Each structure stands twice: as C-alpha cells, then as structure tokens.
Length: 257
Image 1 (cartoon, rainbow, N blue to C red):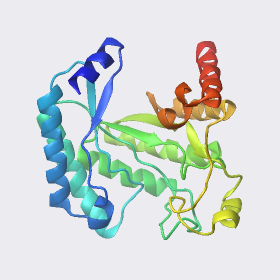
Image 2 (tube, rainbow, N blue to C red):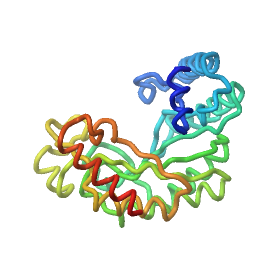
Image 3 (cartoon, rainbow, N blue to C red):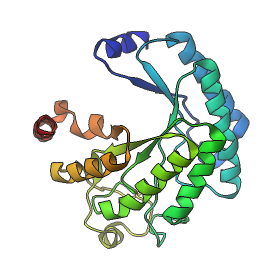
Image 4 (cartoon, rainbow, N blue to C red):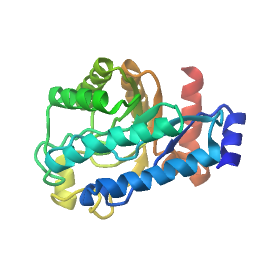
C-alpha cells in the first residue's frame, strides 16, 4: 500500500482509504462485530501508511439511503464510533457516500420512500451526531439510464442543505456507468418487480457523454468537488474500442471545459 501511495503522491493523486465492512452487515446488524472488524482495519492502515502525504481522508463504506427502527439505531451508533476510531488513528477527514431512492411504488422491494425534505432532516441530524466531514452523494438513484436530472435535483439540494446546516462539506459522486433501460415500466415488463441486483441480463454502459455533461453540471451546481464511480469497470480505455472512444471523447470535453 505504501508503494501505491508513493505513486499517487508522485502524480498528485489524493487517496481516500476505507475501513472495510462485513459483507452482510445490514442483515446481521451486529454492532460489536462491525466495529471490531473496522477498527482492526483502521489499525492496519495506520501502521502501513500513517502520515503519508497522499493519504487524504478516511471512508466509511456502510452506504445507506435512510434507516429506520433497528437499522437506524445501528447506524446512529456505528457512524459516530467509526468516525471517532478513524480520527483517533489519524486526524484526517472522514467521508461517506450515501444514495437516494426514487422508487415510490416498491418495484425493487419493500423499501420506504421519503420526500427530500425528510431526507434532508435525517442527514442533518446524522451528520451532526456522527461528526462526518465530507458527504459524497451518489447521483443515480437506482443506477438506471431513465433517471433524470429533475429527479436528482431535489436530493442534491436536500443533501447540500443538510451538510450546510451540520457543518460538513458536500461533494457529488457522479456515476459514469449506468444500467440501460428506457423507463421503470419497461424494467417491470422485462424483469418483473424484483430488485435490480437479482434481475438477469441487465445491460450496463458508459454514460453517453452528452448525458454525463448534464450530470456533471448538476453536481457542480451544488458540490465543492466531484468524484465518480464506474470508470475502472466500464470506461477505462484498456477495455476495448468503445471504451477508448468514450475516454477520448471525455478528454476532448475536459479540454474544452
């Protein structure tokens, strides 16, 4: 890891390292087991790369929308404990990357939907309680190509306001890959009313550049900085001619910008 961070430092790359997690943490909700595992990982990271100039921040990988009942009681204890463990090990910012849900009719499962105002209030209280420094909001809802900026905007506004009120920095996490489907109605016709992680054969694609530009513009309206997800898996030029074309087009856009 130190060798990797040395290379990152050489190329001006800032690195965010995560605490790790148990695969089914959201099922077991075993707080002691989770904190013990993450604290062991935090100690290993600190022993390996403490005070490295490329080490920019910690990341808590327990990504949530909102939680209720036992899940909420768990998160309300887990987040503050991990923030404290990270900052005790190395006094760096602590980040998390939550998502939002757009499915109002329970196509993907028995998930609650809350309006953006409720989302804002929940995260304002959680950020303040936990001491989180940076919130990096995932921008794609359920990761589908039918998600629009009109659907995203209220959640970007809500989270940015929650961060402002709670004293955290707000970043956008702009996804550069998406599942291709024309509408949620078409999804139901093809796959049924099941969670997309269980649907077979959904095609993924790099986000077409004109669409990506609008996503970036929206995130930039609210965010201090922007990170992304999906590049390595879908857009890296080593993946073939389509990825090369996407990458070259993005570089041209970046240069023009």
